[in-house]
Each structure stands twice: as structure tokens, then as C-alpha cells.
Amino acid sequence: MKRSVQLLLALTAALTLAACSTTKPEEEQVDTTAQEDAAAQAEAEALARQRAAEEAERQRIAALLENNVVYFDFDDDSIRSEYVELLEAHAKYIQSSGKSVVLEGHADERGTPEYNLALGERRAKSVAQLMRTYGVSDSSIEVISFGEESPANPAHNEEAWQENRRVEIKYQ
Amino acid sequence: MKHILKTIVIISISLMALASKAEIQIYITEGRSDARPVAVVPFKFESESAVQAQPPFDFAKIIADDLRRSGKFNPTEISKLPQHPYSIEDVKLEQWRELGVDGVVYGTVTQTASGNYMVSYDLIDPFNDKAIFSSDIEDGSYPLIPTSSHLMVLKTKIVDNDNFRWGAHIAADEIYEALTGERGAFATQIAYVEVNRADPRPHQLFVADSDGFNAKRIFASRSPIMSPTWSPDASQLSYVTFENGRSEIVVQDIASGQREIVASYKGFNSAPAWSPDGSQMVVVLSKDGNPELYLLDLTTKRLQRLTRHYSIDTEPSWAPDGKSLIFTSDRGGRPQIYRIRLADKKVERVTFEGIHNAGAEFAPDGKSIVMVHQNNGAYHIAAQDLATGQLTVLTKTTLDESLSIAPNGSMIIFSTVDGGQKVLSAVSMDGRFKARLPATVGEVKAPAWSPFIL
Image (cartoon, rainbow over all chains, first blue to last red):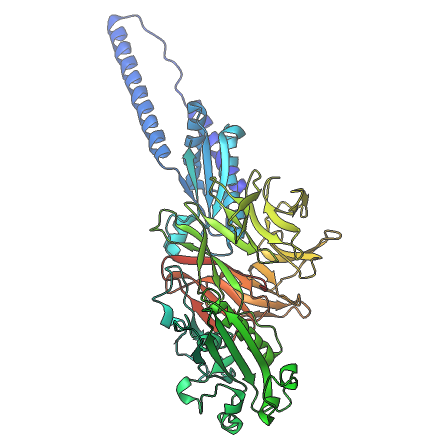
């Protein structure tokens, strides 16, 4: 499971580098008013695009931060690749805001409660580990397991179990 | 199979009006074809008091219900009893032999002048005229007649309103032991957790008599309660509480209600298991990075680490001799049961059959273990003989957990989901007798059978 996360990180880094290398070289400047006007307009447009991009990114992060639950497979503590972006956003936010989080680990009701308490802790620690790789300090993270004792959905079926195998990110 | 009782027998229905809301009823869901017939004759009531008051409960019915709930006996319906004797002189042995019962219980409840109840009861074996007995016959306090040689139990006890049911459970234990040679476990208690989400403090710890009556709430919390377990002298319970936001291990005195936190380390604190002598406890702490077993001295509070492995180690259960423990570990990839010797901390694997084995407990004789066993997605209660390694699946329910064995080793109580509800269930050690103990409100889980109570 750790391997899959590392692979994904490597892939993300590679794509970022590729994006940088394709930036167009600066064109030679010509000294005419029309050209100056055109340049000013282009600059304004670029700025607007940049602002729009920043705004889109801000909205993307805000949307990600609204989601603070990560779900897991049965009897498993691996972080699914779909949650890596989410956890990166939380990790960045924890650092920029200076806030700290409690990572609450949970399990579904299958198996024994004491083992599930350990499984819930493992899941929360998986999330903590990934957040640390994004630079979050140990002192900003507290891990608490509730095992199967605090289900999000108290029903006894597959749908409820999926909702209950989770780590909740709670800001302090 | 056709002989197996499919009928649901409602045992504790008559007193539902008196039952507190948390009381659990017991339904026998699968009886045994070889349950032995016994007769419990309704007791006679007499009063020596000026203010006559009927006894609070039916003493004979409590005995009959206990015997039926053991799975080993099938008390005869009252309407089919050939006679209602109240003393040894009344007993017509040939009628009971014809009925074919292994034992006949009869007796008298006498309200004393002081308002207590004196209960006298006998058990006779209609087929055995060398049953015993006894100084009571020899010293002339009991009639010296041929029938007296059939006496197996001959008792008198004084009870009051408060311990009337308990007295009947003790009588049932005496009768059960006389008939089976095995100590009875009716005069015992069960601790369990009830979750009633409508209550502002939904997580509640109860102690009830072994038949579900007399339930007393001993702790309630807004946060979860886990893993209740009894001290060997049955005076205290240890359990895991989240009342301070994360798991901690508490010891609570049942009579006084006094509580003490015995483990509150970084990480989680879980799975307390009292040593047979009561001086120590094995607990599971994740303070050193991942879950390990630690021996906790209850006097000095000093810890000694027992396991050392990066996997999950949890759910310890002491061998009756106190020299080793079994526990769950996923050091082999999946959870299985392992055994650790305290002398040298040597660990060996115990279970090999099945994908997932966990939450095991030693039987009181130390010869077998009972566990939660999963082989094809379903979690069943299973027993494994330690000498032969033979594993037997005991239940058909599929979400079994939190098992606890009666102190005489006859029955296992556990938590499961039945009819979409979390309930307690019981199964005999051979899997042939099953009963269901649904709560009247909420969900019930984490049952713990008490040791023998004296």
C-alpha cells in the first residue's frame, strides 16, 4: 500500500516537471506603440488568466477541504489513490493555517471489537504517515481510534460497512 | 433433525411488566433432542405471618427455567405432572417412573413471621434408591421411609424479597450438579453494553443475573464503552471507556461504584484481562508504536512488555493456570490465535484452519479454546481442542463477536446480529443448544459472563 502511494507521488512529480519544460521561450521585443499596447493587453490577459487559475485552484482546494473523510477497503489500511489529492490539500492547509488535526480511525463491525480498535488506529496512522510526507509535523497530528464503536451508519449491511471503514480528519 | 425443537420457547414472559427497560429476555432458538426430562412441581405456599403476602416470584418456575436454559434438561409441562407432592411422604415413585423423568423437584415456600421466606425443596431420583443420603435423615429430622433413599438434594434456605430469585438460582445450581455431576452456573451474572441512541448517554454498562433479570446499570456515557471483563472474585469490572475523548482502561467496584483509571497511555488502551489470581492484568497498549501485550501490576501499576512485533497483537486471554496467554496477532498476514508462555515469552501459533481467527478465550478446564472464526466471509463462534487441534464451528449466525464462556464451561454467550439487530446469543459448548437474548431497547453487545459468585 505504501508502495502505491509512493508511485503516485513520483508520477505527480514527473508530470509537474514535464509541464515546466514546455514553457515557450520569450520572444524578442519590437519597439512600437502598437506592439507595446498589444504587449500590455497580453500582459493583462495573462494576469487575468493567472488570477482565474489561482481562483480555480483556491476553489479546488476549498472543495477538497470540505471533504474530510477517507474510506478504506475491508480489513485494509492502504490509502486509495483517489484520496491522495484530498490528503495533500489537507496537509498544505494544516501547514498554512497552523492548525492541528485529530485523525479518527474507524472500522466496520465485522471481526472482533478489540482487533478493530487496532485496525482503526492503523488506518489513522496511514493517513498521518502520508500527511507527514507532505511536510506536516508530528505535533500537528493526533491519532485516535474508535474501532467499530462509533459507526457513521449503524445498519448491519455492506453499504453501512463501506461508510464505517473510514478516517475522519477533524480540525482542532 | 426433526426432533430438534424449532418452536420458540418464551421463558421470561410472565414478569415483563416488572422488567426494567434494559432487561433481556431469553428465547431458546434451537433445543436438543436429548435434553433429559425432569419434573419441577409448583411449590406449596404457606404463611406464618399476620400480613400474608405471596412470594415475589415463582421459585419452582425459576428453577425449571434455569434447567431448560442449560440445554441439558427439558422440564415437563405442569399440566402433564401425575401428582403435586409437597413432601417426601406424598411422592408416588411409580407414577414418576412411569413418566420417565430423571428427577423430581418439589418444595414449600413458607412466609415467616418476620416476613422472610423459608424455602424447603428436595430432588429425588425415581429410579435410584441408593441416591444418598444424609445426616438429616439419620438424625430423625427427615422421615425414615423407603422413598427417602431416592433423595439427591434436601435443602432449606431463608430468602427475602431482594434475593428471592438469587436463592432460586442457587437451588437450580444444586439440582443441576446433583443430576449432571457438573457445577451449575445459574447463580452467576452477565455484564454487557447496551447502546440506546435515543438516550443522551447512549452507551450504558449493565450487570444482570444469568437469566437476564435484575439488570442494573452501573455506568453510562456519551462515548463508547468496550470490553467489560470481571475480576476473578466477581467484585469488580474492568472495561474500556472513551469518556475523556480516547480509550482508557477503568476498574470499577460493582457494589460501591468507585472507579479508577488504570491505563491511560498515549495511543490506545484496550482489552483488559485479569490474571487468575486477580493481582495483575494483561492489557493491550499502542504507546510504543503499535499494539502490544503488557502485564500491568494492579498494586504498583508497573508495566512489563510481553510481545514485541510490528503486527497487531491484541485480545489476550489467560490460561486457567496463569502460566500462558492466548492472543490474536496478524503477524502471519491475517489474524490468527497465538500462545505466549509467560516464563520465557516464547510465542507459538495455535490456529491454522480458517482465514481469520480472533477474540479467543480459554475454556475453564484449559483443554480447549473458543474463538471467532471466519473462513468464507461469515464470522462464527468455533471451538478448538488444544490436544487434537480439531476445530468445530458452533453457530450459524454470521457476525458473531465478543464471546464469553460460563464459569462451568457449559455455555458460551456472544454478541451477534440477528434480524437486523445487534443482540446477545448463547450456544452450548457442543453447539447443539442455542438461545437468543434480544434487548427490549437499543442494541446489546460485549457480554461478559461472571466467574462463580459465592
